[in-house]
Image (cartoon, rainbow, N blue to C red):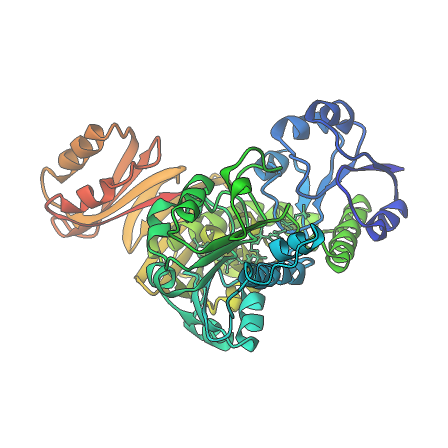
Amino acid sequence: MSKVLVSDSIDQAGIDILSQVATVDVKLGLKPAELIAIIGEYDALMIRSGTRVTQEIIDAGTQLKIIGRAGVGVDNVDVPAATRRGIVVVNSPEGNTIAAAEHALAMILALSRHIPDANASVKRGAWDRNSFVGAEVYKKTLGVVGLGKIGSHVAAVARTMGMKLLAYDPFISTERAEQIGCQLVELDLLFQQADYITLHIPKTPETTHLINATTLAKMKPTARIINCARGGIIDEVALAAALKAGKIGGAALDVFESEPLGESELRSLGKEVILTPHLGASTAEAQVNVAIDVAEQIRDVLLGLPARSAVNIPGLGPDVLEELKPYMQLAETLGNLVGQLAGGRVEVLNIRLQGELATNKSQPLIVAALKGLLYQALRERVNYVNANIEAKERGIRVIETRDASIRDYAGTLHLEATGTLGTHSVTGALLGEREIHLTDVDGFPINVPPSKYMLFTLHRDMPGIIGKLGSLLGSFNVNIASMQVGRKIVRGDAVMALSIDDPLPEGILDEIIKVPGIRDAYTVTL
Ligand SMILES: NC(=O)c1ccc[n+]([C@@H]2O[C@H](COP(=O)([O-])OP(=O)(O)OC[C@H]3O[C@@H](n4cnc5c(N)ncnc54)[C@H](O)[C@@H]3O)[C@@H](O)[C@H]2O)c1
Ligand SMILES: O=C(O)[C@H](O)COP(=O)(O)O
């Protein structure tokens, strides 16, 4: 019989499902070393946010087939390490949406009416009606940062309370925002105009410390900020300083840069600050939802069936998967690349299967391309199972074509993304059946394998330009691993594709564009 280890508190409904197919051990509060010592016995691990599943734990889990996260965020799991070991990672993308949204709404109201401090004061024996005069949310402006599942629900409820809604989400269409009653605006405007700012975005390199001393300074002195998304999106030191100095009106936080919250200035602040210990998903209903959702997936995988919300493995049969895997990787890489070249919000994705590929199954390739395209917005939350739905929700129109007559390589995949900032295209092929090569960027022929960090320029093909760019990168200590120029005619327009060893330092793109002859430059991370 299989063995499942449950290392965080999970609703009994999930344990009951697992017990149908496995021996279930519930061991809470394990230290990392204790978990490493025993994980080798188990076929599955079921967790919430309390267990950090590091590469060391994954390596020690020699029998592990699946890690189930009873919740949304898998940022406490080293997903690439699990993927490398062939371990499926599943989550419950929607099981706690309502719970988290309602917690954010509760925070908005509790903050406005000083409920926690007023309650504590009465319980201490006082009857102080003067210290807790609050503010109404009616006709106030709510700025929703991140209009995904949770942000949309918060917005919809806030609207019924008579709030005016602004939203910032670069990956959501204006139509979708309007459906929810939100006006999509730039972040600065949202910061300037909102009375309440609620965060519902993933923590990514782009969103880390999105709320910092500079952005806090743009807000109204009465603004109240709510974070029920992820710790680290707010710079807590800057927030405490802004609150102390009266630069903003209040804050309600459910998540923290480091959890459990250690020593923090925030603890010493008064009724303008509410802190809860990561309770967003802690409702009876949500815990039943996520426990059942994830336990069913663990059961299925242990029985050899596919999982419905795998974050790292497509929900396809193993045979199809094996055959298509290299092409899916090609599609995903091209999707990720064209998404970053296009920038902004993509509205249309054209996918053309060319040459031998024209006779292939297209659906898995489309899903993989969309997964790549949406990666910048959703990170590990987009997977092969939800990529289609996520794209639809963002109003991305997918157009699929086939052209068997294009035979530059045996089979190529061509992706063209049109968005708010223009149109870009990329083409790629598999060399030797598995090695991905980029064969065309924006209509210019090249032949380079993609690398983690790349720089693309659009420039005039003229003497000296490569040298100037090389010297400029050198002056910023950027090491070029390889470089290739693609052009259609001599001394016409050309594209340069450079593989670089490290991410480009900030500000250097602006310097590159100033080099005479260079018209545009794009940096991407693949
Ligand atoms: N406090 C809790 O207990 C709790 C519970 C559930 C979820 N969460 C967290 O809430 C957050 C939202 O979850 P969700 O289920 O709504 O996710 P979601 O994927 O449905 O929505 C996230 C939205 O953020 C947008 N986005 C991505 N990068 C952005 C950026 N740089 N700027 C603005 N918008 C950006 C995406 O386009 C997407 O629409 C996540 O961080 C999740 O981990 C917390
Ligand atoms: O990502 C999530 O689902 C939430 O942060 C909830 O985390 P929890 O399961 O530890 O409450």
